[in-house]
Image (cartoon, rainbow, N blue to C red; front, side, top):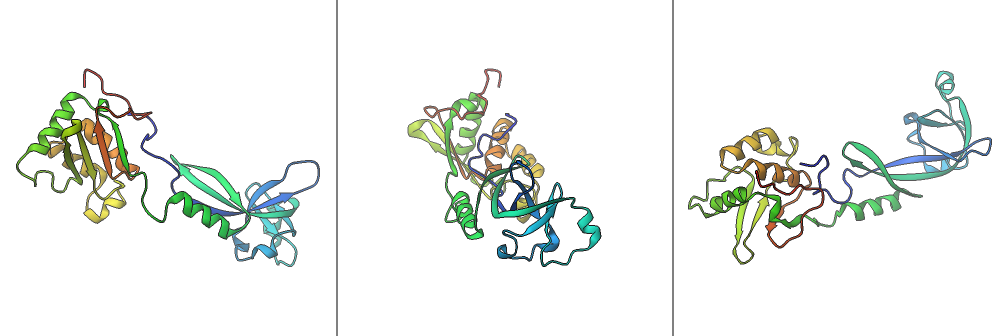
Length: 240
């Protein structure tokens, strides 16, 4: 499989951080620092256009504030807070990335709601080429669907359906995302779920692909011979 997850779309783990835009002596561009935790209670009105001191991580407002001398000494640079920004960040494969910023918390929250689709669940159904699976794996899936016993896949958090008109197959993924934290309600880990699925007869290459989709919180995955390949997801080789 690829190093990144091709099923992931949009932004994940969105967060908002209040950041101070600081100007200082010289012709240098403004710098941006988070407000020191000891002053997190201060409203924007007590920050904007006020003098501050800062280091490589935090800034401290100095006017009308009581600050311990030791803490002041840890912030050697002096400047002026030009503006207060609300920066929107997302987590991408363990790295924090800046999406953009707004001038008020309300505006940032509005953007975050739009980006995170809090009004519903979208883009959770994928139609990709059957060529991502070997013929053997596809045959085994169709065989699982054709079994008379509907309980064979019970507890595996996946259901398979025939799409006879298109010679395809659909997978419904249950209780996504498949992470250790989310699967606690089922009393299992992702490792245990993989083993249960193997014991249930699901082909290993199908399991690996399903877990990629489930990590991206996909709920339906359709394998169609006429669908386009998913960029970043390898096609099956003749040996698989």
